[in-house]
Length: 100
Image (tube, rainbow, N blue to C red; front, side):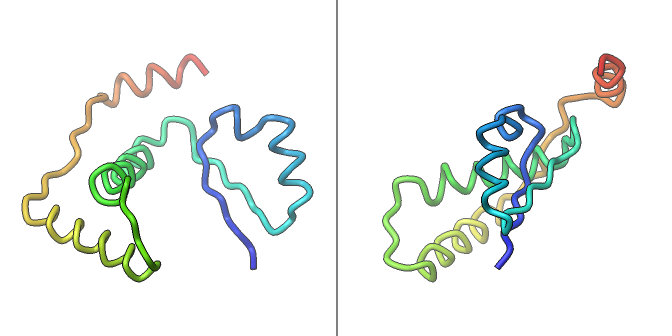
C-alpha cells in the first residue's frame, strides 16, 4: 500500500539523509505544500488543537476508542465554534513573496 506524506517545505524534509531513507522505500510519496500556504497552516493548527486538548497523554485501548474520543471532542468544540482569525494581510503575504 502506498503512503502519501504531505509536508511543508521545511528543509529537514529535504535533508540528504531523509531523501536517502525515502529512496529506499518507494511506497512513500512526499508531497510538499506551497510556501506560505496559510490555509494549510490552519489545518495543521486544528490538528494541533485536537492533539493538545483531546488525545495527548490519553490512553486508548483501540483505534476505535481513539476515533470516538476525537469525534467527541469535535462535537463539543463545534457547539461553541468560531473561525480561525487571519492575522496576515494580503499585502504582507505578497510582500514576503517578493523576497523569494
